[in-house]
Amino acid sequence: DAVLVTCLHGVGAASAQRPTRTIIIGGVCAGLVGVAASNNLREKIAQFLSTCTKSALARLIKQISPYIQEKETIDAPVTLHMREDIPLSFWDPESPMVVEDPAKTAETFGNWNIAWGTDRPSMHGWDREPSQVSNRRSSRQQVDSKTSSVPIGPDPSRPDWHKILGLGKPSDISRGVSEGLTTPDSSSMMSGSELYPDEMTEVTAEDIEAERKRADQRSRDRAVGVRKAVQTRALSYYDYLQLDRILDAQRPQSLVFDLEVHDEMLFIIIHQTYELWFKQMLHELDSVISLMNQPGGRVEEGDLYVCANRSERCCHILKVLVHQFDVLETMTPQAFNDFRDFLAPASGFQSKQFRLVENKLGMRPDQRIVHSGCPYYQHLPKVEEQEEVRESEEGTSLLDTVGVWLERLLDDCCGPAWDFAAYMRQAIELAAEHDRGAIRKYPAVRSGPRHAFSASNDQPAALEELERKRAAHLKLFEPAAHQELLHKGIRQLSFKATMACVFIQSFSTNISLQTAQRLLNNLVAMDEDIARWRHRHSSLVLRIIGSKSGTGGSSGHAYLKSVMDKSRIFVDLCHASHYLLPQHSMPPL
Image 1 (cartoon, rainbow, N blue to C red):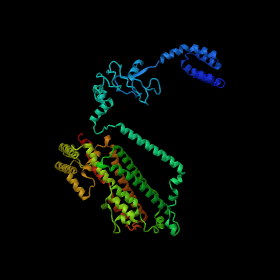
Image 2 (cartoon, rainbow, N blue to C red):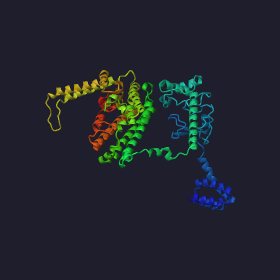
Image 3 (cartoon, helix red, strand yellow):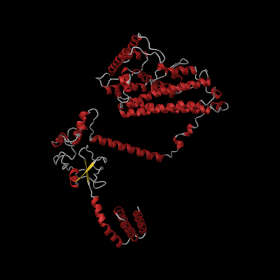
Image 4 (cartoon, rainbow, N blue to C red):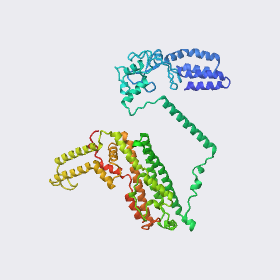
């Protein structure tokens, strides 16, 4: 460190008067720091650098020349090759390497473009000439000088990495190349396609070029759009959010027709915030339905991940809506009654967006409760709003798309040759047989922690109870019994979709099913959050207005309570838990 500081001081002192010589001395200093081996030499370096004369520099170089020669011998360029017992990986810097003769390296790796060093091949151009793989280590296979330069793998004395990785035998690859039948790349792709025909697709040069042009055009269009946006208008935060319209949208009716009631502003802002969040939920639900509403019900893994994320976002939005009641509940019943009479006949029942949210999730018409003698959508003030809500009721809902997706997922996971319902029936029979043996072995059981053992005649009753539970559980996996539940309106998902849901929950720890399990959990959470929101709404109405009728003509709290009991949408996903068995009772797949 002392030598380095002295060198830097010497260079700094000479830099003003001798800029050219300073550069030379600076380079020498960088080398001297590593080769100075004695205090005597360090002192001489400090003296010579302080004078910076040509003669001193010459004497300095003469004295340290033995050290420089030794250093060059130690740092002679080495050539690194892979060890013989690891798979081929030219670019992994962590791979164990061995030293080899530089002459063999040039023959082995061919003529590479050197981009950033004399002993590193370029990763930019891939301009390797078709010079051949030869003179590998003596234990590696030798190939003809006219064959491709692609490594052909280890010999039989080491692990067959080509076989492990599904690339075929090295001898097959080299034979195909030497006979001119195929190229190494295409043979690897061909053997992989034979192993996984549904997952491998050959990409042609035309496909790559078309994708490149598409991406290039998209990038160009976006750059033009950004530039146009910056040049054609001066956007501010206020303008971007259109705050002039939002902040001017509060019109307390008490102020218009009488004296303003202070808490009416809170009431207005809370409900405007609800409507903004409903708009965001509709935006998310439309995207999820669009991604999942694919021909045949097959949803790509990437799209399924997006659907899980956006459905989770809806869950968080609903939690915010529930917590907004904490703010609204700070308003006293007297404060609300001071401006309530000005609100009639307006009602939250007239929220078009909330009706759209219900219909897009999958709420059925028979779950609606009619009041005032007309359908729910006729309470909306505008005809176009009524038509929009009716169209959403008749359109594809999230529950519909989830049902089709679940049916397709079960086909993809199990295939047509495997019956998951039969598998579960077998598991039920096996678990019942184990329970019978346990009852026979221990016929007497305590009826409670402080009670004595029950009578011996309870063993037949226990066996009878077991048979009853067994029959009821088996009936869940009968298609005819499920069809009867559908006909009665007790179930909404088909038998096949229900089996898929049971399959996902039974093997939810499997990594390939975790995204599907996450999506189903989010749907159940959405259903629960909406029910929680309805409950908070009903409780607030009861606390604020008691048993009074609503401003829209409903019965108020009584109406909201009855709706809360019938409005669950994804309840079938919850009922699937009734079909499950303990994990230890599941036979191995």
